[in-house]
Structures are given as structure tokens and as C-alpha cells.
Length: 423
Image (cartoon, rainbow, N blue to C red):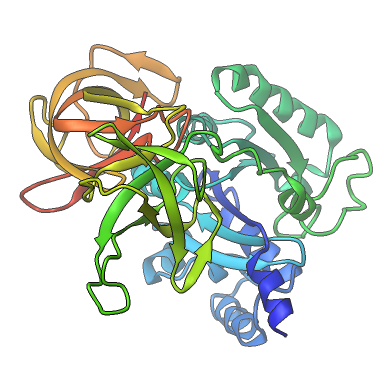
């Protein structure tokens, strides 16, 4: 039993997000995935059957599996990000079901920020619309490496291959503007279950894999940065007990690369060097640790290290600067203030910053940069420049999504006002 559990815990985890316009069927698709892969309990199924009958719906409304808020059920839309977990014998999955409305762009950014893969839904009747461009751009901006374009509601266009090919062509005309290497297309019907878990007889012209097969087999091993060693220190461990009298460890989460006992490392900002003496994980001692493990590292030399410092491999230093350019998605009802001051959180470091320049706002409907409109309001995406009170140690978001991201916080209210991706 213990061996079985260990195998289960060691299974690879794929995080994916869904995006699409309102009524494209995102929540229904997730409900279908959970239902057809037998990842929901009988009582859950009975509850949504009752709810569907009560509302007088013809089919069991599988969207109710993720749309849990009362307002969502009343309006038949998704408002907040809903996370769902399921597993198959091949992989574990965390799904972020994100809203399609323009006014919930910030929710989509939140749900997609940790995803390996994005499923973008297109209604086969409507084809590629402005929201498709918006969601594809956000997926590209957030450096999601894999995109599956699901052309949904094929049952409403009589499963015509011509319509599928037409939409595929529409998408591919603007795909070169996106910074995504892996784009795949699947014709589906979330309502009827075509090509979700099982191959559909209605699309004999489609030779590709089903959605679940693709999710189980897409290669994500190279998505993480395993080259550049990055270990932001969160906490200095000093037990000062009889057993660990001289113990001094540095606890944190590995945000890039692989660390081994005996490796030479440098500590920033001091630049002092040492070697890794031990890597501890609770009561276990490891010889090696990699992203995204949380561990405690001890060094052979006594160096003054505190929270916010970073332990790195000497062969690849991160950038260090107080002046930083980044793309932000604005989360707050109060607009971004030019020359405004905000708290900033980056890995384990907390500093203050000032907005020195609003460079441009992105028109996410045309993917063009607007240099005239500098009014950045909730759900807007913009390129800005900031100056921090102390240097940050960072990589570009393209190189490392963890050391290349940060959040801005309103000092008065303590609200997170923006998510930023360092250029």
C-alpha cells in the first residue's frame, strides 16, 4: 500500500487553464472531463442532476460541477476562478476554470499564471472572435508553453470538417503574433462528449488524439528552467536546541535549477561563495534537490544571510537592478498612478517601488500597443517602468516564470493591485 501511495505521489502534475468567451462551454468541458474520466462521486452527480431538473434543463448541466457560486448558477456564467483536481493512471491534474467576460481578465491572469497548458475554446458557430485573441494573447504573455484550441459545439454545425478547417485557418492567421511554440487543434462537443475522453464516430475525418489523451501525454519536462540555480531564502533556521546547537540552515523554495551537496554556490547580494554542506527536507537528508522543492540548505562557511537574499549557482547569475521594465495586468478599481508608490513582492523579497513610466497600454482586441492612452484601469494590460528601493535579483519572465514575476500592493489597503512579468 505504501509503495502504491508513493507511486501516486510521484506522478507528474499538469496544471492547465481553460479560456474562451462567455457560453463557449468551458465549465461544461471540465464537467465532461471529470464525468467521463470517472473523477466525480455519485452524490455530486446526483446533486447536479437534481439542480438541472429543477431549472428545467434538457441535459444534465455538467457546468454546475465548477460553477459553485450562487450568482454563477443564476446567470449561467463563471465569475471567479474555480480550481478542480483529478487524476488518471498516467497523471495528476489541477484545472483552473477561468471566466470569459472582459471584466474578469484579472481572474484569468490569476488562474493561468501557474499553468503548463491552456485550453482555448472556440464556438464552432462563431469562429475566432475578439475574446479568442484576448485569451490567446494573455496565454502567450503568461508564457504558457502549450495551447490546445478546442473547437467546441461541433454538433451544432453538423460535425462538418470544412467548418473545423476554416476556424483552424482563422486562428493560424494571427498565431505568428503569439509567442507560443506548441499549438494543437481538436474538434469537440463538450455537451455530447465527442473527442473529450473517447474518440467520436461523428468526426471520422479527424485523425488526431482526444483531449484527455493529449493532456496525459503532452511533454512538460522541458517547461521548467533546470539550468539556472535559483534559491530565494525565506527563513533562517536556528533551532538552538541541544541536538542542533550549531545548526544554521536557510529555508526556501527552489525556483530554478538543481542543487547538489558539494556544489559551489554564491550568495546575493554579498557575492560571497561557499559550498552546499547539506540539503534537508524535514527529517530526511537529500543529496540533490530541484525546482519546485521546498528544502533547507546549509553551507560550509558562515555567511551573513537573511530573508530576501538569494543562493545561486556561480555559472549563471540573475540580473540585479533597481530599474525594471515589466508588463502588468492591473487588478484594482483605483487606476495605476504615474509616479505612484507601491509595495512590491518578488520571490521572498519585499521592497517599495515607484512607477517611473507608463510606456504603453496593450489593446488586447487587436494585439497592438497604444502609446497615447496612458490611463491604466482594472483588467488593463500595460508595459511600465519602475524603480525599487533596493536591488532585485531577477530573470526575465521568458527565462524563469518564478524569478521573473512580481506583485504590486497598495500600501494603504494592503490589496494586491497588479501582477507583473519582467521583460
